[in-house]
Length: 122
Image 1 (spheres, one colour):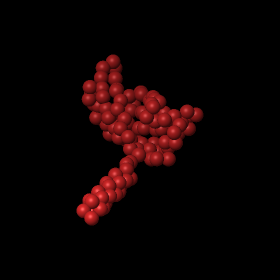
Image 2 (cartoon, one colour):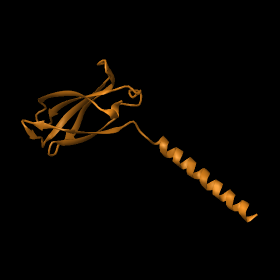
Image 3 (tube, helix red, strand yellow):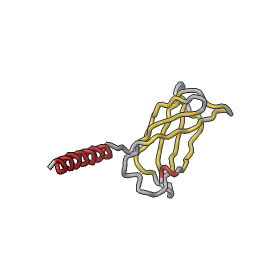
Image 4 (cartoon, helix red, strand yellow):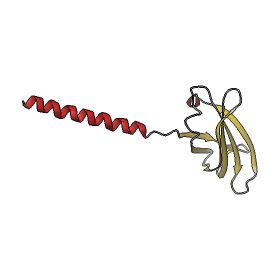
């Protein structure tokens, strides 16, 4: 009888752990971290910038919305931002990230727009 009781308690514990892990996986988001390097006039940038992010497919069609006026602090040329284009844009195909940058202090163009592909976008 005692063995049956122990198995019952063990099975209840296993069920609780399975339910808990399932609820944790539901808490995942579509946001991801993007780290970049910015060189201005040959030196690593050390200022605050406004950045705009767009996502494209291989044919050049924009996917998702444009993330505009993202305030980013750049230190020693390195910046890190969290981006979220939603789940509908990531369908297993390659994606290209376009980044446009403006200096925050004067809001004038730095003259940089680039599309990059990464394995994390595919």
